Image (cartoon, rainbow, N blue to C red):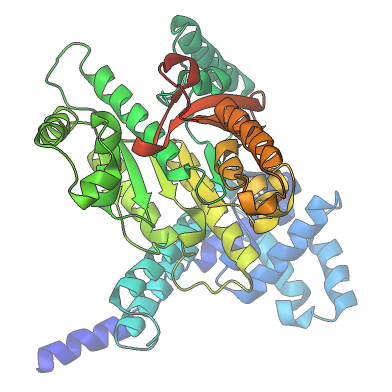
Length: 499
């Protein structure tokens, strides 16, 4: 027991990382030559200093340098005297001492990185203490899983906002990458430069799905958002598998599609995919009203598509930090080509955060999804609900302003698409005989309604309302309600309306 106590005592006596000498040497270099500030200004701030006196002096130097003014012991003395804090920063003698601590301005960048590294280590210690205290019950509102997510979110924030030096690209490097992208598109004429969506006309309009893009697919309930995004997921996954099997027909895909289904369970989503491929009604499958032949076909198709690389995560109300962690894990273990979230409003922000409003909460989620797309270099498709304002208009085609919490969603998205089916609304306006005084008027209205229904039967519109890197416009699609199946309109035959 004594040895344990001694070791614990040793741990408690350890001091947080710091390097006052590096801080003094850096401040001396800055006072000697203000151009040294350019070597550290990108990644070093006053909060990185362990000594509050050094932090205040650095803040004053930074303020004067950024204003184009001289920062030396003379000008700083005047500034500190004017604000009444000269004695608090050690007086004129300490400013002169800092100047004498200067080793060389060429080392300023190295001193700055040492200071920032010590600060990062102190932050890690604070995070570790918070994790330990929470685990002992300091925050009873968070269960074990919530504490893990909160810790992951804090570490992620430190990694992304903790003062890491940004890596800029020279114009030559950017041009080289642009040429590589153009070359890929040129060599794949007739195909797509991005990830195949399984829908030819959508590929033509967008060039496929592109890395780092956040795509919002929105629509009112009943429009087929999940069916369409399932079609896209399946088309992308089949393309990944086909690419892997160009040389080896038994090879497995090197990437996968991650579907985070917050509304439907994994088996329900799989049933929908099977129903589309096997052309067996999903509704009849659930009720057991299928023939032996249909069931055999159902099983056969399931074997044929079992290698399609789709990962379904049906965790309800998943948090942003948990989704990010799982995406990172998939990219590391299986390769990640596409992320789909169904749907946006069912997600929760990072554990431990409490946004003041729903708008701010959605803003955090969309910004987080865009950050995931950029960090992992994969396209992210998020489904979104539309506000009820659509229903109050005569023309119910969605607009960008119909997006719930539209400001943040529209701003963060690289592409916004709406799915709309006129057939859905027209079916609700079938004439009722009780609304007419004469039978001939009812028959006239009914014939017109049937004619209108025939014109929109099994048709859907995919409206590209925003595309940061391409044109907007409408894409006509085929929609088969029985199998919840989308396809290119002109590739479908035998579409006689049952009216």
